[in-house]
Length: 217
Ligand SMILES: Nc1ncnc2c1ncn2[C@@H]1O[C@H](COP(=O)(O)OP(=O)(O)OP(=O)(O)O)[C@@H](O)[C@H]1O
Image 1: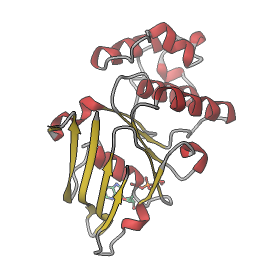
Image 2: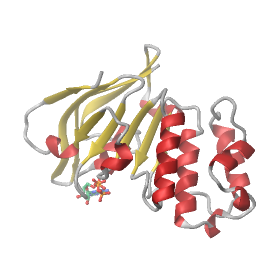
Image 3: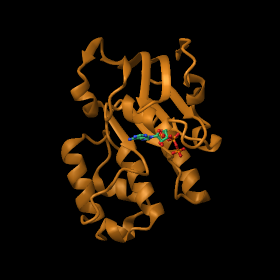
Image 4: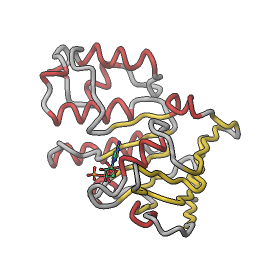
């Protein structure tokens, strides 16, 4: 079971503190929404959490079954979907899924054909990703996350480019495949994090100098 602990986590770009003194304890099945207005730092927080960019101060600890995971290995334990993350556009859907699942294990009981079915992309299985609509790409990104057997799922703006039907589909996907793991969602749309049990407003961690502790149990 994965647990994540942040102590005094702080990030600064040039002279601007994006968040400061953020403490957090997240248990294995926490569902946490990271909220805040545009430009407040939601994506920055998620990238720090994933180990993609470093904190300026403080520390992040991943513990898996009581074993501390080195930062260089965080990526093995998480999946990440965000509008700024690119898909391999020259591959077809089938090729991309096959490629992705050479590196990540699929959750038990799912094979590529079943995934394509769940994504409602059967008619596009031999189409190159570059010819996908933005909504199709978004469904695929979410599928790559939820179909991967990783204990941590990070979603930045999960319903961007999805229509009403797509948004409902996303909530079903999160319900079915997110239940037993830790999920963080960067969002300012309450509908896309309606199933979260905790909300962390990044704006509460702007420069105050005061340490605020949030415990997510
Ligand atoms: N690499 C960078 N260098 C300097 N400043 C940056 C960098 N990346 C982001 N920022 C700044 O950090 C702040 C937070 O940006 P971030 O993208 O994390 O916000 P956000 O809450 O995810 O925004 P949105 O809701 O618009 O996606 C912004 O002021 C942004 O300009």
